[in-house]
Length: 159
Image 1 (cartoon, helix red, strand yellow):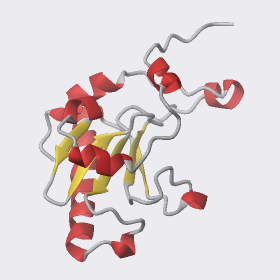
Image 2: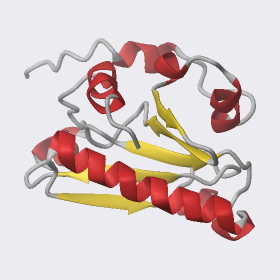
Image 3: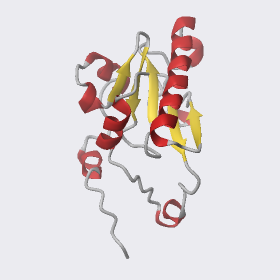
């Protein structure tokens, strides 16, 4: 058996499994964008790297409004959210040259929302062959770039 070296995962393993309050609301209030991997703060929403990505460059776009679903957003917030998603995809294309994207919104816990009280959109870059035998046989997903490196690469873009 071969070992996969991923020392950055220890931070995830050791952290408390359930944090109090809303992750997005906490990040909005804090002035720690680099530590929280916030790429940009817009007038009505922000972009943050997913700390537990499905692929390199996995972004989340969240409005500042703490609402559970799209229909609860004001029109201006909804418009800003989708404009920011579009810009994020364009910048991921420039930096990472993916062959496609999964863009998704999980509304409600039964739909897979890990943070169901605060609507957010996942943007996952995809490449041919980025799914292989590892997740199927070993129940392991290999992420080939540290989140700090992805942050540095993407931070240079004006969303």
